[in-house]
Image 1 (spheres, rainbow, N blue to C red):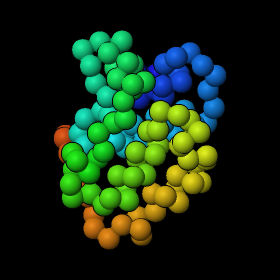
Image 2 (cartoon, rainbow, N blue to C red):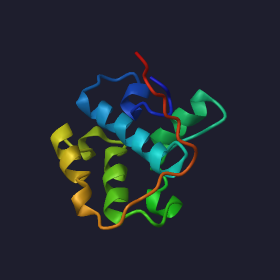
Image 3 (cartoon, rainbow, N blue to C red):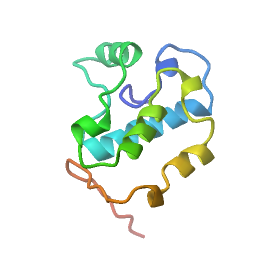
Length: 118
């Protein structure tokens, strides 16, 4: 996987489980909302070091208009320790339920949408 989206345990070459996928989804949501990846660097090594040593900047600091609950959900998905992430996709789905958030959000950056043609 791409270093920007891979879980820290994957970068360390450790055994993976479904929580690595939860991390990757969190990184994708972070990018969609903030317009930047949770961690960046000039090299793969810098990106991996950053994600192993630091927590990502909370989305609320980058996009103040998003609901705090949504920022917290994504932050939990991006926890460095897999045991601190959601246990399963159902928990993520429930936490991301839009009925929990009163105001909408708009993604930053340019959307890249490809239309499938038959």
